[in-house]
Amino acid sequence: MINIVRNFINKVLKNIFKKKKHVKLGLYGPPNGGKTTLANKICQDWLGEDMGKVSNIAHETREIQIKEQINIKRGSKELSFNLVDTPGIATKIDYEDFMKVGMKEKDAKRRAKEATKGVIDSIKWLDDMDAVVVVLDATKDPYSQVNVTIIGNLQARDIPVLIVANKVDLKKASVKKVQAAFPQYGVIGISAKYGNNIDKFYEGLFALVG
Amino acid sequence: MLTLQFVPYSEIEELGPARRVNKLLDIAKQNKIVLLEGRLKKEEEKDLIEITMEEIDDKFKGIELAVINPEQKDSGFLKNLKNEVLNVLLGDRQGFTIIGPATVVKQIKKDPDKIELFTQDSGKTKKKR
Image (cartoon, rainbow over all chains, first blue to last red):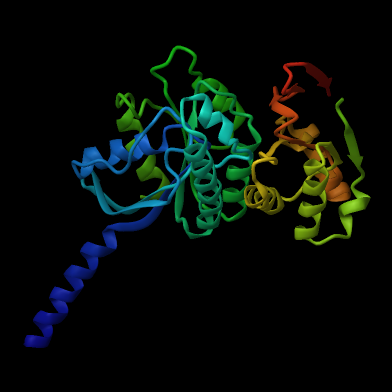
């Protein structure tokens, strides 16, 4: 009798956890696209806390940041994932650019050094992702080779991709341009800063990994 | 003065991924713009970014990179089929790749039908496909 009850409980528990998805969801993209702003929005919405510091100066995120066990709900569906916010991927980093925004030479050089290491870490982590949200600045040129290289490598690894065209609150933003550049992918225009279209984004997440 | 170095695909064809990437990067580090016939594999493009980051110092600030890949265009069934056949026959020889040192090339813009190359002294050259 005890065995029957135990088996029943195990079965019920197993079914509950089977319905939950637990994936490693990466936020990738070029610097200053709004990855950490989006990570903060997700964490604020579902955990009530921020994930990382944001700044207008590029390469603010220079280390991989992970927030574990984020559970998001949509009707009866539930999605559980570890959110991985990555440093922006770039092909060039000039410490003098940081000096132009008021940083001292020593600090600028240190930031540049940390930023190059951050890019390398982001690339190394690509293989560990179960799904990736590529965060692009919708006011910028979507045809940049960094974007194409990131998405091409994800495609080669069969990692599901959702493209977010961020900063739609800005006049110059064009979601259509991003869609035209990557017609084979789902593109959702959002403003991570102000939460515009964020429901559509969560809907997209369920479609991506749900 | 701007120096462009043309690299025929045959020069990198026999090389392994690491040597290919290093060969191209070595040219860029001499302040020359690399014009490669064909393109690198996606994995090699990723390696190129990674190795570039490792090499960055006070003098070498990184690269600007652009790949023109004719198969990316969705031009209808027949043209796509033709592209597929060409892809099988030519492989990575199709298209071309530009790698410019960041100290010389400020930005490369793809439209995607044309490439605009902006140099650091704000001069501009245009290439049309």
